[in-house]
Structure formats: structure tokens, C-alpha cells
Picture (cartoon, helix red, strand yellow):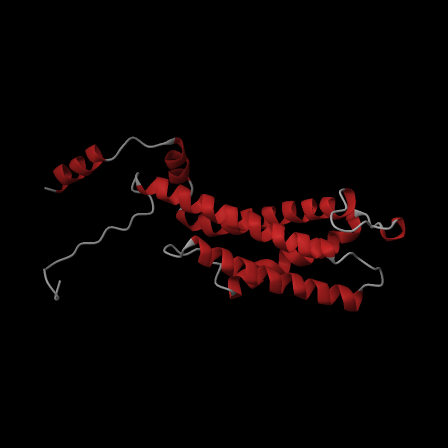
Length: 182
């Protein structure tokens, strides 16, 4: 009977972990929006760190005091990245998240889309900005965004692997028949 089969399946399943209990509370349709939101937060963090690397730590090249630009002046570039990059990720098949893709494939798609998005922002900055901005900050930002989103995808893959033990994200299939026809 159905109830005895359900009881057998429930007995084999380990008790839910904290992550499994948390995931069960979130509606299924919300996960794609949470992924985009987390990516946008990581883009902001990466850009702030890129600014700090360029202007506070002055990696690879010293910034002349005349060209020292406050972070507020980079706000438009950050806003442009927050608009352009999710669109570039969608066009590069980063969104929606699909199971079965290797981590390397995901990071490659993120890296190419990030490079294109950052290049678009640099081109706009050259045409529409009178102030000379450091282009190294865009290189730092592109690298950091790729690294942070790559780590994010690795953590996502590990979490999904963990959740499969609790029958979360598992699609059941019934195979009827045997051989080639089955």
C-alpha cells in the first residue's frame, strides 16, 4: 500500500539538518530570485574590495594624489554593473541555475559574462565621463566578481549535494519495463 511505502521511505531518510529545515521553509519559486540577489550582493562586495585594493592599498601602481577619486564617484559604475551584469549572466546562460553543469562550466560562463559587462561599463565611462577614472579598478572588480561568484556556485553545489540526502531537490522517476524499451 501507499502508506507503508511512504513509511519505509521516511524510515530510510536521516533526520533533517538545520539547512534542510531552513530550505523547506522557502518557497521553490523564490530560489531563482535569491540567487540573483546574492549575486548582486557579491558584486557590491567585490567592487568595494576592488576600490580598496586600488585606492587604499594601491596594488601594482601608485595613484597620484591628483587622480585620487572618492568611492562615491564610482557609484554610477557600480549601479551600471548591477544592471548590466545580471542581464549579461542571463544571456550567457548563467541564469537560471541548472543542475548538471560542472563548476568549471559555471565559472567560465560567469567569467565571460563578467568580462563583457565590465567592458561595456568601461566603454560607457570613456564616452560619457570627463573625469579620469582608474581602469585598474575594473580589472580588479572583474576578477573579484568572478572569484566570488565562482565560490558562491561551489558552495551552492555543495549545499545541493548535502540536501539530496534529505530528498530535497530530488526528482523521482518510475521506470516501467526492462531492456531497450524500458
